Every structure is written in structure tokens, then in C-alpha cells.
Image 1 (cartoon, rainbow, N blue to C red):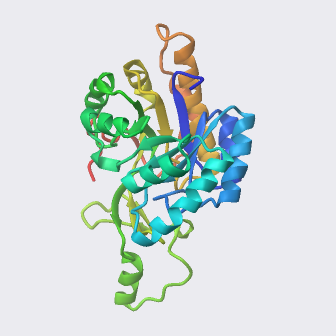
Image 2: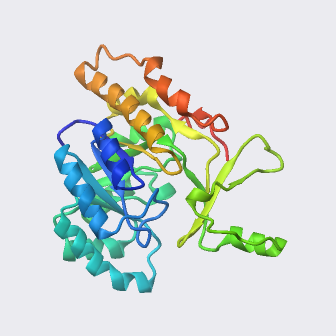
Length: 309
């Protein structure tokens, strides 16, 4: 990669992808809801090609998420989709199912493979195993703390990617739980129950915490009540040699995500200009804090085991 540390962000649509690339992102992660899980927006092949063309103007990269649970029916659709991705020139694919890896090797062998097994990517030996199978990067589990992350990186034979900002998934079910609940309550389901609906859960014991919930063709997703923000200690991850930092933009506005990208871009550029003189500035987060939902705190997440679900 052209820079030592990559700033990666998700995007909900072509417009947002361009805004975030212009703001300083080195790469965007997008995908099709059929094959990707918990995406801010679903991109068809034509829209993906648009993003590839836009990214080229910024010398940036485009990765496609293919981390869904692959059924036998989905497997039939994989070859055609993968061939299309290979033709339009994406840079990499996130996968967790060996079926995706095999299909990529057969139909788009030039595309890089990033292993993303969610919370189970917790040790360097397993990550390196997938490296021997063709993966060039591992997406490390968000449940790892700072010491576990930084101590693992020197033993990795593949690149490391870490989520540094945004919400995380805390529960997933293939069932339509919200629709079933409303039906049980005798309440009509008006419209869809997707990301734009703005639904949330509140636990009886923790009424001050709000957990966003939505349903799509992949089931029900419950998200964290707080947003990870490790900007203050980003230098520890850079010192350790983590190559890619992911901003999760799901359920956030373009304006918010743009502010987050600019903040992390400033930190990374400042560190890369002079690592010895680097010092975090609270001012970098001013715009993000102005836009932060007052019902959602910025936290260190699992980096210091502060966040408990």
C-alpha cells in the first residue's frame, strides 16, 4: 500500500463513498446484501464499478464484503458475482467462508483476500493459517484488548486490520425477531424494519442505554449502545504495526462519518510525518463530538475492557 497505515471506511452509497474518499479515506468497504453482512448500504455491480472509478481518482482502494453466511442457494450465485467483481477492478474481498476463498481463487485470482471471522479471529496462528491459504490480511476481533492486539501483530505473517471507530454488532439471528415480536403483540408492522426505521431496544436493568436494532434479508441485528473511539491511543496501534484502521459507518450520517475520517486522517498523517514528536490533540475530535448522538457515548470499547454488553 502507498501509505504505511491505511484508513478504511464503510459507505452506504456511491455519494458517501466519494465524500469519504475526498475527506481522506485510503479505502472503502462496500458490498451486496446478498453476500455481505451488516453493510450500511447494498451496492449492485454497476454501483460498485462507479465506486471503483471514483476511488481511482484518489488513488484509493475498494474492498467488497462477502462475509455473509453462505447457503447452498447463494453458492450458485457466487461465480457470476465474483467474475463481475474481478472485471471491474476491485482491490480485495473480505471473507470468512472457505467457499468464497475457493471461488475467488478460481474466478478472480488477482483480487486480494482478507479473512474476517468476526469475533473468532483471536490468535496469530489461525490468522497465519489463512495466510497459507491465500489471505493477505486478517480482520482482528473487536473483543481483543489493546495488549492482546499489539502483542499479536509481530507474530502475524499477514496484514492486520482493526476497527477503531463506530458501533459494533452484539447479537445476530437469522430469524425476523422484531417482526415476530410485533406479531405476538398484535401490533401491525408498518413499512420495513430496516436501518432507516430507527428502532432500538432498552433493557429493563439499563434503561439509560439504547441498542439500535434492525432487520434485513440476513435476519435481525442488534448493535452496541456506545461507539468505539480509540483515536486518543491510535499511536499505540501504529507503533505496533497495524496496517489498516477501520471506521464503521453503519447507522451514521454522511456528515458524521466525514468528520470521523478527517479526524483519523489528521492523526495518521501527523504520526507518519514525525512519529517521535507525535502527540494526540483533543481538538481533532471537536467536530466528531459536536455531531455525536447524545444518547451514545464514545468509549474505548474492548480495547481496555471498558464496554460491557
